[in-house]
Length: 399
Image 1 (cartoon, rainbow, N blue to C red):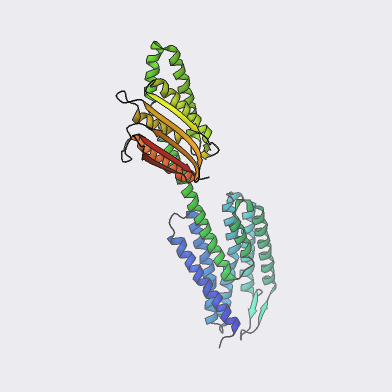
Image 2 (image 1 turned 30 degrees about the horizontal axis):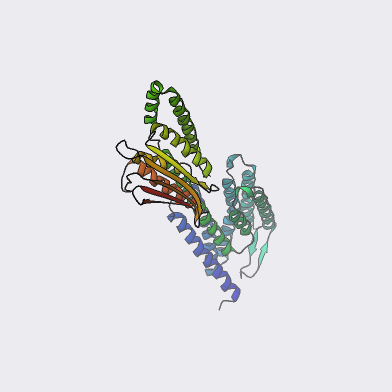
């Protein structure tokens, strides 16, 4: 009948084996995992699994001295690999050149010294000896030298870990730190947790990068639709009304400057900046469509931020759909206020209206605005018909 210590040891070994096998399977199955990290996890957990298999094998052949010696040797040999593996991980996460790293060279030297002491001590019988009854184990001088070198390797790793802690996340730092001070099964569980944390962080980074690229592409798709018409208008105004041509050119230049500035920005911008951009655009359109376009502003709240190129394309869309020589003049109202759900921007016009199912460029731009609002500030965009004809576009940005 097994005593409690044997039961505890066997339970620890079997638990570690199970966790190690799961970790290897996870590393093999996870998609989009970094190639280096996949290989590292497979090697690391394979070493852990192999060590515990030797321990388990040793329990089944407890009364055979030769088996005890071989399993003990292989287990100890694999144990020497752990320190350089951790050093490799720390260096990789610190983005250091491994071949030129003094820390890595020192880790390899200490690993080689430990391995040499183990092999030499086993061959000469100066590492440890086991009596025939397996009741007495005597340790030799090479065993204590092996422990001393291992202690130095541990100290080197801890110093390197502390010095490079800024390159690691807090979970990574504390997991590696705890690795040396917890039981074997918990140690493996911690390393598996670190593998999942690394993969989760990589996934979030990729998702953030994809979102950023999507936002950038959405902004770049918003080409000003009136540029060519404006240049043509300026061309004819130069001969008909040079003063007005100068005014339109100045307003158009101001619009382009603000437009290019908005495209270059990645984050949100103050509403006042977006409003100035819109006003610059409308100044050009008011000059082009004199008597056919009228704009009114009702701004009571400006202390909020929003993605760039949100308000201006909406107003541009209203002008493009609403100004027509055969229709009544287009009246546009731009308002901003603080509502119960956050900042509210409303663009109202008395134009002919439009359907969201249309697949022309202006409506694609509105869909881009909706996506960027959601991704960058959890905002919403709603389009509805105006009483009496026209369109109402409402933007809500939570505060």
